[in-house]
Image (cartoon, rainbow, N blue to C red; front, side, top):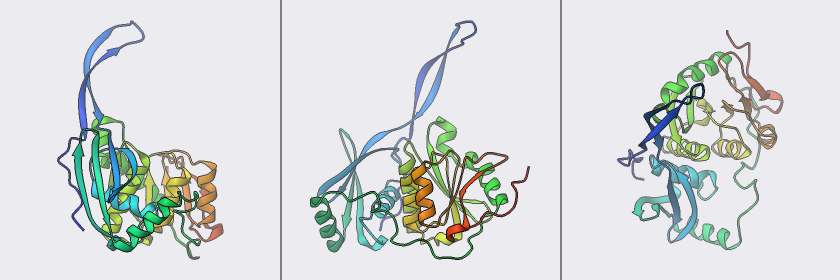
Length: 272
């Protein structure tokens, strides 16, 4: 496998803007950074599979994580190579699969896409306490904004971060798309052979069922979301034994699911 794309492509652009003050209707010139959003055509050679609108960085991680969470591959060894090409419409992400996985993928494609449970694990996570303490969540939240380098420049990207059980942010990926950010992170974790029981996931976005399904596919046992979850996300977390904490703020967090399915426990009170 090639190393993850460090990226020499521009990830943001600067634009002239006018600031209008409501109180006195005054207008003042200024400038503003915006994250680059470009079509990324994911191709499992030679067949195009999906076009994602994404930030053009960490694309090899994206290809690996996307392929894994979509159920196209089972391990990193199922990918023989990844290439990035540019064309007039954006970027083409060419993923070369092993012959077995390519034939399986082509057969699935001819048969149509599966149901929404295709990316979920086949069984709930194993029983046993998986503890994420409130102090760890608080620490991760405190450090999250500082770790979002692209968002600090643009104020317009999502992030998915992998945190140690003490709340330290060990790795982070950003993108204009929340699913893309998580796929990039999963790809990075797969590449690094990270144990999913060694930490927890924090996301800056709304927690939809797709986000829970992608986390479950990697074996993550606890997800913390800055925004709120959907009903289906909560149901999936309960089904697959994932601790789900959301609406995470400086002084509190809501626990939507913990250890009643063996998925984990959050113990104690949020310190103020």
